[in-house]
Image (cartoon, rainbow, N blue to C red; front, side, top):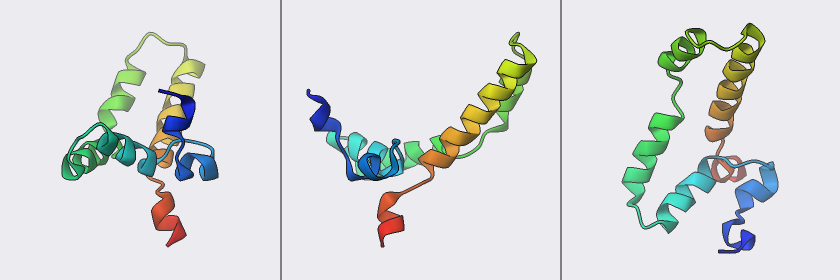
Length: 87
């Protein structure tokens, strides 16, 4: 598929993939909406285990901080819905 096949108003407006993009992608794959929403709800919830794994890794301290920061930023982005902003 071409790049245009994955264009979405959410990405075009926000400049990053957010909730709406992943919801529509799951639906495009033929998954049931309720199932996609359940999977996304799991992914957009903060999990303490992620921080435990980062803390117990052999990464340098600075790199651990970068991983924590990226995780928090990705959670924030995944919790943004253009459809809810536009309403």
